[in-house]
Image 1 (tube, rainbow, N blue to C red):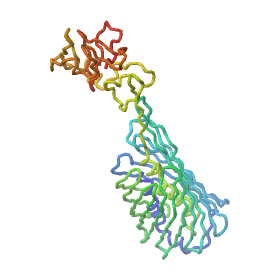
Image 2 (spheres, one colour; image 1 turned 60 degrees about the horizontal axis):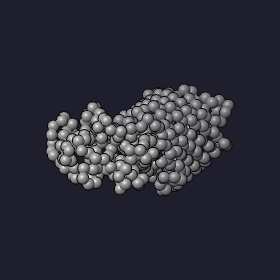
Image 3 (tube, helix red, strand yellow; image 1 turned 90 degrees about the vertical axis):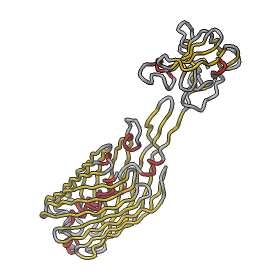
Image 4 (tube, rainbow, N blue to C red; image 1 turned 120 degrees about the vertical axis):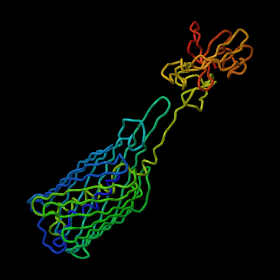
Length: 434
């Protein structure tokens, strides 16, 4: 998650060396062809956040519109982003970006599952240029992470409870001088499901020093976490810009990160002439990638595990245990008696029932308890075993139907003192008796 919020600030490196033209030239020619290709790689102390992404943004001749696409691949994450921007008039512009993020649930939630969690989000912005160096914007964003059943076994179900939400924000971008750009956004996030309501804020800046530039960013979001970063860019020529950056973020994952980016431009400079279309769209795509990176932080926190207790008593009462215990030795699904294979210690060392201790009762009901290696551990009267009903009888219930005379019998002794018949001649061989 860390890369997603970090990409925006480093984008200022793309603008290095063109700030003066951006701030001073008020006669935009957005009809000229311009293409920007960016390759971005990131490393992090979180091994699941190693990322490599590529983005292309293009504005075409004779059409006041631009298109962009981003593909990203990392450990546990895949992203596809499509965006477009248009000039509605000389002063008014509109951009919209949609992204689909797929994350491995075992990476995000630490579960043993092959399921994925998919998040859809959209970011839109209506921009009004005030003059040659400033513009204001109104943004409306939304996201949805649907609920996913991550694991379903007879013992438990684990669900990821998704989250949906929307954000409305206002922004101001201005050049304080031809080399210093500041962009600030402030808004409110409203959660629809399993999320938080609260203030969203982001501010970033870029400062040019000839071919060098420095850029920084900070953001806070109740649903996607907080972070900050700093980057350094260098413009080799009008077509090639490189930057490096580092930062820290708190989200669905958290920690420090570092990355490098290479940007190549073809045709007229995309950042030339008062926010050319390709540059505007590039900023909007980075905004979406940074502030709505994937699974919302709050959705991850709301992951719950629902346990289904599989065992019942002889009377059908549900037992509050996920392991067989004396008296709770019937399957809740069909009422049949459990067998030795259900014991937690069965096959503990790969030897099936031979991994369990066992008891041999003599004619008087005294039991000799042996470990799994056949070594005598103790002598124990029948009355000391769970389910003792009197005499030499062990069982459950009060009708006698599930009672058994253990004289001269052999029984496996389970983890929780459940006895299982080891008498091959008996009709209940392998079944629990207490």
